[in-house]
Amino acid sequence: SVVTDLPQYILNELEKGQEVSSLELASRLGIDHQKLIGAVKSLLSHEGVISTRDITEKRVELTKEGVDFAENGSAEFRTFQRVAAQGGTPQADVMKESYGKVGQSKAMAAGWIAIDKSAGAPTVVRKVDSVVDTVAEQLKALKLGDEAKVDEKSRTELKKRKLISEVTIKAVVLSKGAAFTTTLEKPEADLTPEMIASGSWKTTTFKKYNFDALGVQPASGHLHPLMKVRSEFRQIFFQMGFSEMPTNQYVESSFWNFDALFQPQQHPARDAHDTFFISEPANSTQFPAEYLEKVKTVHSKGGFGSDGYNYDWKVEEAQKNVMRTHTTAVSARQLYKLAQEGFKPTKMFSIDRVFRNETLDATHLAEFHQVEGVIAEKNLSLSHVMGLFREFFRKCGLENLRFKPTYNPYTEPSMEIFAYHDGLKKWVEIGNSGMFRPEMLLPMGLPPDVNVAGYGLSLERPTMIRYGIDNIRDLFGPKVKLDMVYNNPICRLDKKD
Ligand code: PHE
Image 1 (cartoon, rainbow, N blue to C red):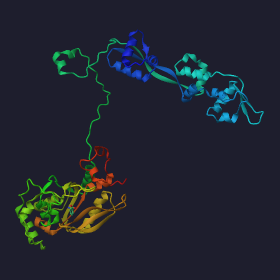
Image 2 (image 1 turned 30 degrees about the vertical axis):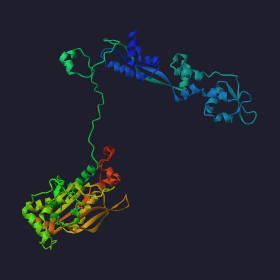
Image 3 (image 1 turned 90 degrees about the vertical axis):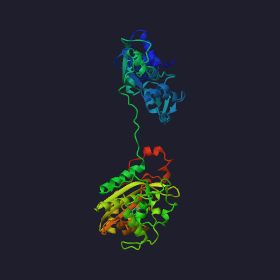
């Protein structure tokens, strides 16, 4: 019969009187000894109900071959069976059997068979009519724990043949404890307000603390791959002496996003097709008055050695609030601040979110992150800047760079930065850069001999390449699988896989 409540079974057995070993109980039930020990441990958590004494016992166990012999007959028995009763069997055939070699020598030693070489090729012949497979019988008995049936000498022989082995088993002898009972009280796990109010806690048995319990795995936060790559870029900027710009302003006025950057008010990027305009509040009204006048003048009439764009610059256009389209809006604010506070050589960076009214596809979202660096120094040349870019991207693991002229309203010259990607085996555009125009810097009040270089790249692109993600929707947005966030590995930009 199957015992479902092992602890209860043990208590019932102990109730009958004598002490009993765990091995004995396990063999009575025909269950694994470890399982019985588990039940003993649970009983021990009830103080005083049972008591135990450790013992060790030697047990005989069948080896793999021993089990095989017990089930299918010993090698010598199978050899005898294999030999034809009339005329014998060619020795070569017997030897082909897995048991043949051992079987033949043991069966010969037992006097069951002989080898007849009189007819040329050796033949194995039977010497007796029938045999008893004692070895298999003994193994079967040992398997059932019937050790008394096998004498010492046979046991030594079986051990020598590696059919059995002796193991030492740790067990316990069980007896009634001082507080023995067959009706276990289920201990309370929690102390409740009711128990305190009624005073019943005084007589209640509480479950003991299990100080060995492993506890619940604490849930911890997981960094999104974008944040991991961002932190790598931040480290690189910090190593190179850059300080971080404050980027906590997604809504920006057109003034700082475009006008301050000498981007004319008719420029197509300032269209609702490309930029998200804010309807509430639609406008910003606070601007540094003097600076705003200078920006207006440089756009409409020129100045600082420039002809300007020669158009009717309108403050209403500059007031329009937008979701910032690039972090260069932040750079503009910081450069203006630098000019006001008194110029000193400065390296600044930012990594944060920007917004564009893009057509969405596998590589474009309406919001993404830009990594931007700005270097302001006296007499800075393009070759300085290219050297600095090489150093920056070398730290990102990109050694092979190319620069290609391009156009930005606010930089001249402007360069796209390409890197050769070993994995993709092609040149990929990694960034945009340039030297900010005097029409942008001089109205801010920066000294005329100061040059400012800037560069920008997206955070998504290197992240996708780094983590082998080819659809941006798998990286960012509602379709992102949390497993991807939980399981993605750490990021080292400078380490190639
Ligand atoms: N703002 C540019 C972009 O969005 C990047 C850039 C930054 C270019 C600074 C030149 C200087 O692509």
